[in-house]
Image 1 (cartoon, one colour):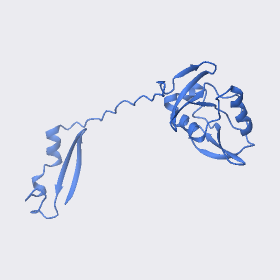
Image 2 (image 1 turned 45 degrees about the horizontal axis):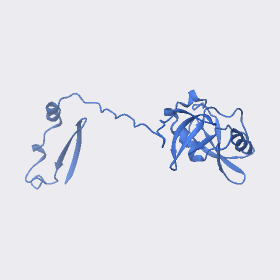
Image 3 (image 1 turned 90 degrees about the vertical axis):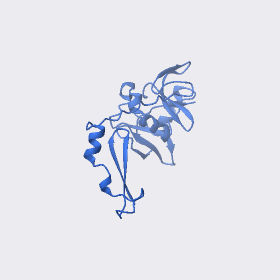
Image 4 (image 1 turned 135 degrees about the vertical axis):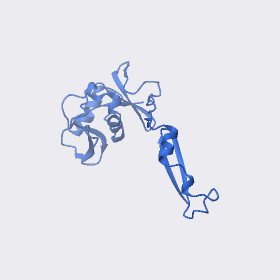
Length: 188
């Protein structure tokens, strides 16, 4: 027994059963002649194909009810943006990049200088910002998402650490002595 499924219009599917033997179909004696033609089906439901309507994208909220990309001012911290949730924790990123480019050790120190709780992001945390870049409107928040800027992550080995390019999200190991940009995060 073979089945053919045909979409006629949005939300309407027709199932055609066809047997390899005309007199032993699934529904008793039948043949393909008993099935409506595509033209007959089109005439019955109308020939205008309907466009499927996409449901609205659900809002992403932090544990505290902050919307994705929303600016929040924390006392003693300043303005941060909610980037999403990673490993069950809310990730917020600083409103601006640290100025210039740093080697990896200097990148760690740049986040430390911002104050307690500021960290160089892990690979996953930085990639979360990249993955949500359209919803976060990164270009208006100082991250040139279409540029080839590379950003450091805290994920490292003895001589290299992972960097990520924000034009395409590509991550790769980089020797710690080279310079890249820094975007500090806070995780709650």
